Every structure is written in C-alpha cells, then in structure tokens.
Length: 210
Image (cartoon, rainbow, N blue to C red; front, side):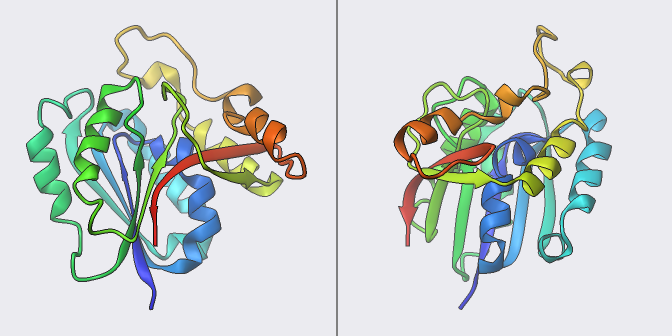
C-alpha cells in the first residue's frame, strides 16, 4: 500500500534548495505529495509556480501545493497558529512520510518548522530532516547524488529567485549561483564513499525510517 509524502518547509524556495533530490528519487512511492509552505512572499510566488510547472508530469500530477500564508520571519511568534494550521492538512488516517527542516539551522523560521514537525514523529513512517545552506552543523546519514539532468532542473529552479527580492535584514548574500553552493555534501561523500561520484549531492538526516 502506498502512502503520502509531506514536505513541510518554512519558505518558498526551500524545496528547490534542499528537497529536490529526495523528491525525484522517491516520488514513485507516494500517492500524494503535499508541499506545505508556512510563509509567503509575493515576490517569490511567480518563480515558485513556474518551478512547480517545470517538474516532470509524473511528479507534478501528485503534488498538492499548500501555503499557510504567514509572513516570513514571524513563524516563532506564531508558532501555535502555524502548528494548528499545518496539522489540519495532515491525514492521520493514512500512512505518510515527513521531510522537513533540521533543527540545527541558523534561520529561526527553519528552526520553528523543525519544532512543529517534531510533534509528528510518532505518527509518520519516515522522518527525514533536510539540510539547507543555513544549517549550522551537518549530522547527515543519507546522501542522494544529483545527476546532470536533475542538476540542470535544480539550477534553473534556484536561479529563478533573486537576492534582491529577499526580505533579509542585511540584503547581503547570494542565491545558489555558483557550483560551490550546490555541493554541500559532495566533499564529504567523495571522502567517505569513494566509488560514488556525482556532480552534486543533497544531504539529509534520517531520524526514522519504517
């Protein structure tokens, strides 16, 4: 019997940055893929919609796109409200896997989502934390190689966004527009799994896998 996948993320663009490899590798295991984004920002919506539309039909047809509508940088302040609204989209009568942020992250919105998601640990079949460029420490134990086709899709998706449209306080930084940004896990994999060599990797922490 198949199950659902819930990708619970803080921001528009978090899925492209950190969840694409899992999505592409495992989509056949799921009936429905719910991408639940806690916050919205009007300058990112068009890019997000285009990126969803670019996904292969076999993935796109399964996706349910849900945005909870909270403002960025307010998720801790609205923690209980975010949790209540998110849980309304969880079907507790059906098996599901959960992919969400890791708690060791420097972005407070990501940490808020990790705290909320932890309450579903006992209900899900798999609980997988994903690492973002703002993660503080990488306790990774699951590595998915990104082949050239997926690399091109991922790069096009991420490059659709612009740092000029961010709500960051400093307005400093860049989106993932250099190869170094795409290879968070590659150096570790090449050192420890010498026969596995992809151009890029996404890395995750499996906390539960049934």
